[in-house]
Amino acid sequence: MMKLAFIGLGNMGFPMSCNLVKAGYTVYGVNRSEPKELQFQKQGGHIGKSLKELAQEADVIMTCLPLPADVEKVLLGEEGIIPNGKENLIIIDFSTVSPNLNKKIYAAAKEKNMAFLDAPISGGTTGAEAGTLSIMVGGDKEIYDKVLPIFEILGKNVYHIGESGSGSSIKLLNQYMVSAHTQAVSEAFVLAEKAGIDLSLLYEILNVSYAQSKIMERHYINNISKDDFTPGFELGLLHKDISLVNEMASSFDVTLPLGQKVTELISEALEAGLSKDDMSAMIKLMREKAK
Image (tube, rainbow, N blue to C red; front, side, top):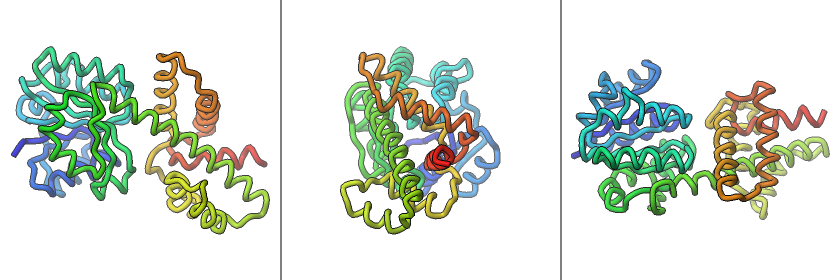
């Protein structure tokens, strides 16, 4: 069985890596903060290896990191995986980054006789814990086939899209619609409050109507109904994603009028101190605007 490494034991990476341990793999975990590594060790994972050591010892290295700069540093930096890795190493990045960065990493890996797959994920922390994520994979099909058993432990809906960067392209389209739905839910529920409509009744009716969406269900059940905006997915990360969407649109000379407005509003929410709140906290900004 292949030896695995998982870099980034955050809200998504931790349950994903634990599922691989439960499936019988030897998994080395690396995280910026030591407590999460110790928690991973308690779940049966291994810790204590540097990036350089893992680059030489692991068969497959996976990353799930918050920002493109983090991915670039870990994979391409002087102390990173590709400059120090062995031939035939397979690298899988589950982070949400730009297709152009994927292609840059793919080319660097190929030059060193390594393989790289971009494999962004959707499904939230509940999907990560249950192993039911959607996984959108870009890169060489033969490498995808080789690591498909790993993907099938982590996700229920696994797709090979095409060449490097194609997985990220679809993930960014997903994030564009997530941001738009988030804004629509925020505005609709604030308007309902102003009109004296009971939000639980509103949710019940919309959830069996054409306005139904996973985002509305997630935001209402997990956050709005409880008035608890503890992050499952931070608003600051949604801002990063919609910014990448705008970058992608610009590269194809496509204008996104709604996307541009949503980006402005999310930026305003960040300025209001909501960056570390869950993305559903856009409703807090809309409530302030409605006063």
